[in-house]
Amino acid sequence: MVDGPRVAGLLLWASYPADDQSGRDVPTLSVSGDRDGLATPDDISATAARLPAGARSVVVTGGVHAFFGDYGEQPGDGVAGVDRASAQRQTVEASRGFVDAIR
Image (tube, rainbow, N blue to C red; front, top):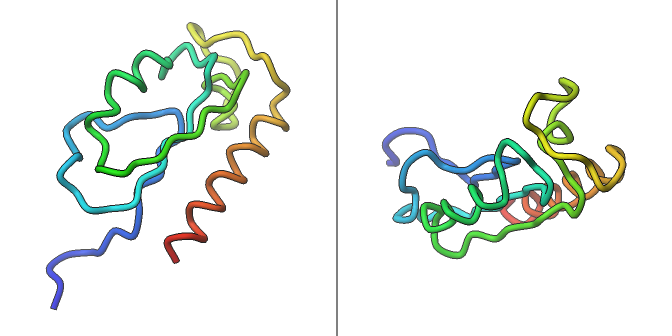
């Protein structure tokens, strides 16, 4: 019997763990934008050691923070280098491939 809920995977969009998750045995994918002004590429890189071993990352070229949601522009975000539809298509493709692989 397993205590508590089972986590099949960790999928991060334009975010990073606040605390150390490196000891967890869970498939992990981090999808981020290289022009994100809020969860910046430097933030993503600086926290990569907190991710579980074997974590994969996908960087959406030209992607900004606002493209990972549907709430419009935010102060401090970067300037997009790609259109929203293209960025979101890349995010969906990476996410779908990750979820399909852990099913």
